[in-house]
Length: 502
Image: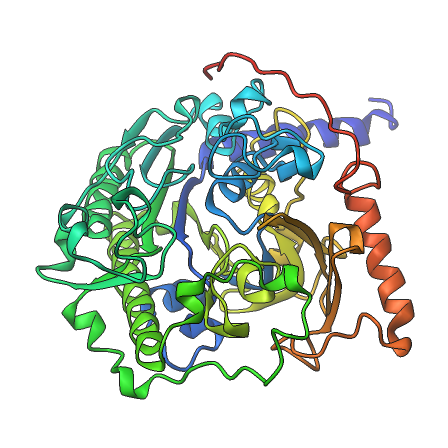
């Protein structure tokens, strides 16, 4: 045999055996996503919140310290990470149709990405095309909570073989839930308003408890075939509902309120605080503590349901066959900067928890410090499972960081939002966050997160940080070229199209 053929034959043998091994392994995917969960978790250093099951997953996986959503609102974020496309590509910039897009320089004609990207292959759809069974329990794509609990909402049928929409006791008694806006119509009284209730009954009777039960049934039914199971929990999204044993974990008198320096909001920019509602600004300290109690209680009850699903994975001897990903759609404020909920470009709203655990993980229990984006989840699980991508994505695989948590895969993460007439674009590196509102016309912010993790001192106009500002502006320009991301820029044309099944 000619010697020059040996490397070629060795390569072909490696490709064949690698492909055969990947086909034989066909790792399952368990994708767990919480709703409106920030990093108030024990594994992220929170001293108060009890999250033993998520903390346990972090011990057998890699925890990403600096993971960021691309839009801190449910619908745009979910459309983005399920397609690995940025919000200006999906054109989904709002939870409702047509009320946010044109001022951003892109169209928001519909909250369904299929109208703009009819041929895109979503993360579960890719696996479905390659022989995996795909199923969804609860909220993966957007639908309103609590209003649309029990429905398909804005789901994507092409992504799934089976869909389950749990509905529990919390939905049945929602009219009795305390809301800061009690006179608002029922459809809007809770979902976008700080609201909470200590629920009667068992955790298993609540929507998340029922969702965990249904997820376990699907694990049992699909245990002998490769599966992609997405489990979307509804908490801690407002209303913050949990049963007594979880409320009792957080006595209000022991809750510390965030400290806000005098004049912090007055220093602006106004756009950075535009998400604050009058009812939130008027909250007493007693109400603030009750709201935080409810939020943390709902985290702990959701964590308990995560634990039930993970325990079933172990009981069914599926741990060594399953890649587990846990994250949230965006972060959340609980009084930091005097703000509540989401819709901002502060760290509390843009940062998300992200844990990835793989079979035989050599770096279990470690944390990765490089910046990553939710866009990166899709290409990562495809890479880990050996599934070729159907088309280019805007995220990148995090596999190098799983192999070496000290590695990095990108220099910066990007988040955008539009709120109260202001469009903002933010870039986060390992040290700094830089934000421009209305292209800088409505304010610029720069924070050194190493020295100032609370983002209190704005360094944007500090002469000693001119070089940093220039570097961060260059990051923004690379991600959102002028004329596209500025409010006055031209709008790319997106055609509506019929949905295509996959």
